[in-house]
Length: 313
Image 1: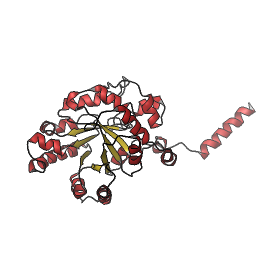
Image 2 (image 1 turned 60 degrees about the horizontal axis):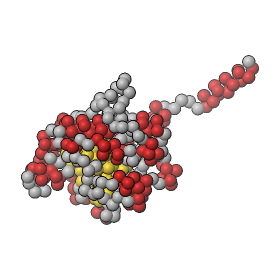
Image 3 (image 1 turned 135 degrees about the vertical axis):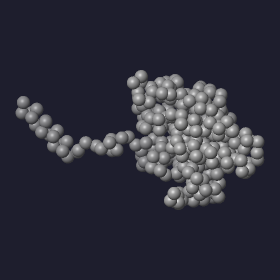
Image 4 (image 1 turned 30 degrees about the horizontal axis):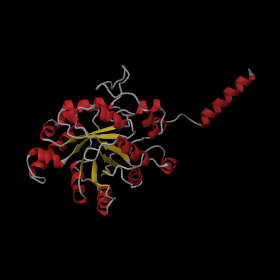
């Protein structure tokens, strides 16, 4: 009996010395840097990468950029090369210093358009361990819902965010290893943000057609969409005008308005000369170059963006 009493006393002393963690302290750190930036109201800057190799991934991971879009739409779709690229982005030194959050968040632009609704490509890509995907040519709300469903695991039947019902097949061993988590923890956290506030995966859908602009409010309102990404070149072609025509900017303004109304983050690609204008419009993530080397222009664009202060509305 005396031993039991002493054990309880010791536990009470330990409890008083180490009070319970607050909700923020108890919450595990984010894997996905992009989500951290969006939740803190800070813009994110990145580049497109078409050099899909292990060492290119290592170079991008140490670049200081917030995200990279690995382009498999206009580069050969080779999951084996993508697997090596993502492995190259893993740095033991970075993990020891910063924990599991990836310094540069890897997003993969898939080759299949949203209107094709090909689930297997999204499944193969997600099973390699990125933190986000970019789907080209999402033209209708039905396309958007199909992409959300393809990216989500089926949810528990009593989950408050059960809909849109997930269709992703379960095979997460490698992705969990890439994130540094157990399989069970990966399954719990590999859901779409912000539909699941604790989710680490993000789905960007590309608005790059007249149809997408027409339906942009409904697309942006689809639960599970984590970002709208405007593709200005395809948008110009779809509108039947040259890039730079006023009609393209008019369409972009419609997308900007829908993003503001729905609260969905908005991104596009632009050069350093347009960074401040796009941030002033309300864009929150910008691709400012490519991986032909992080050029001086890319560095200048990031510098301008990070020092930008939005005018009071």
